[in-house]
Length: 306
Image 1 (spheres, rainbow, N blue to C red):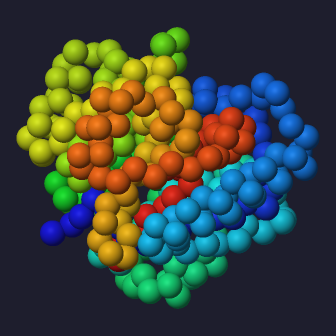
Image 2 (tube, helix red, strand yellow; image 1 turned 180 degrees about the vertical axis):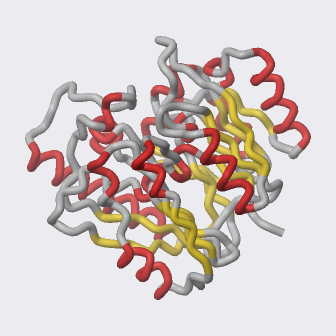
């Protein structure tokens, strides 16, 4: 039976981390406030990345680190979960990206690196040709997989096509679960993984962002029927990246919920207690990457489903 957790994680060490104006068009989590110089931004991002990897490895998590290359510049290379997923059946899926600057993040040498780490590449599914038609689906930014129950959750946005998700689910044998999610300004939330994180026995979700009563009820019923305790977060907590978490598994089989320090500080004691009843919590300081990249801890980790 498939597990929601995974013992291997792919991370990409950034060479040219920077604020990306293309992605900022529909990523309300990015900010230019208090902008650093380009050199300062790169230096801080590298230090945060290295500290993150050290914390994960110290917790017994197997991390495969790929090095970004200096050229061409990839400002968002630190977020590999958007362009590739590695599935237990030896399937590798590569995805169409909204921003042209992000499409060059897809690298065959990184897939080969994961293969050399023990992942048996048996089949490839390349979805990126849909970019020419303006159709996008950005990996586990767009999709929250419930592998155990063969479900794929996605809030629709310019970066998440319902039709392409349906095609992917047909290939995987999963059921697609689509809904709409907006922030406090009524703007579509660009990625599902900023408002929802799914664990083995719980779901962290900003239900206030799902304004359609029927969609909200549908989600709540699915969570109940699949045995997930619902841990609600507020819109403000979502803005502090409290929805951008990932439950992973270390080499001892322990389950760990990874989040940023920003997200961890936003949680109230009751939420912490409810999560700790299911899993260990691990928080990492990644303020620069969050502020200027608009992504958090979950976005930096691509699961390798061995």
